Amino acid sequence: MKIEVWSDVVCPWCYVGKRNIEAALAGFPHAAEVEVEWKAYELNPTAPAERPGSYVERIAAKYGVPVGEARARMARIISVGAAAGIDFRFESVRPGNTFDAHRLLRHAATLGRQSEVKERLFAATFTEGRPVGVRETLLEVAAESGMDVDEARRMLESRAHADAVRADEAEGMELGVQGVPFFVFDRRVAVGGAQPPEVMLQVLDRVL
Image 1: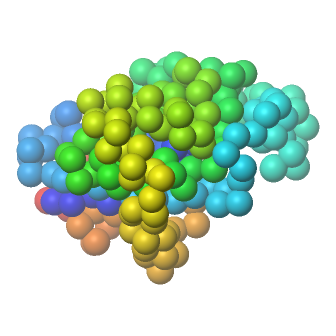
Image 2: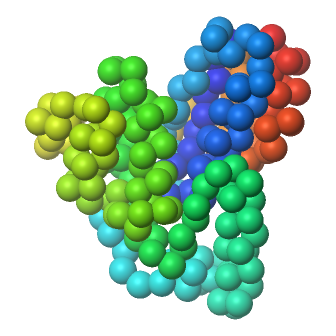
């Protein structure tokens, strides 16, 4: 079985979704037969490499809600994230453009390290307050994931994997992906949102 997941590394619900599908697979007797592929999706393709200022205030402005309501939304994500083992620290989040991060993920996929790098990018964004739109951060993540840093640097300085990232995004549009995370199981069943592990496990059983 193949699970394709469209997500972005500056999307908190995508982080929860990653942990939840992993928890579901941990309880799935046929997990060894499942391949997970992380597909590119940019929440804001025109974002600069790094955005200064308050993350909560940006969320409030994006959705047109008071800052207090944005904080309440963040509190809910913090609670759900804690149940998934995630330490969300929104006060230090510095999101930015994720195109190069997606290229790094494509590079990691060729080395069999995509899920590991995905986890490190999420942690860098939401727990460690590092800007994943900055190449220095991406090279640090590459090193932390056991990748060859010089090779990763050469890749980032080129246009390698750029077409693959754009192809992922185009494919997502064709499939009707309008929000992330978005999971596609064997091109037969699609599930949107960070569903609980028990829901994902039910889908796995149904698709098998």
